[in-house]
Image (cartoon, rainbow, N blue to C red):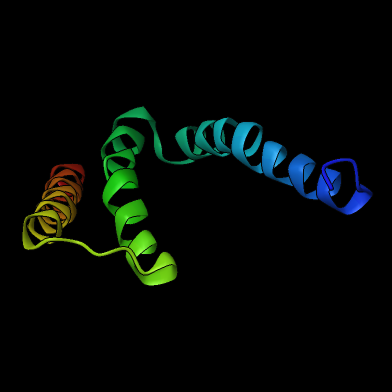
Amino acid sequence: MVHEPQVLTYVFMVAVAASFLPPLLIYAGISLIGASRASIVSTVELPFAVVLAHMILGEDLSLMQWAGAALIFISTLLLQINDLNHQRR
């Protein structure tokens, strides 16, 4: 089963998607929006993955996990709004 061409194709696609694309996209994002804003936006990665796991994989989340994800999203939003206000001045 592992040596079937279709399985090896999927393994290759997952390897490329998981190891090659993320650094490439991070560097492209940093060059577009700057390092400070990119670091703020990167804090959303974990709660976004948790929400997607709930939506796509049907993972059960506790109230505390939902609250934690919401706090991270809200804090990131507030940081972005604060950053925009400072840029306007």
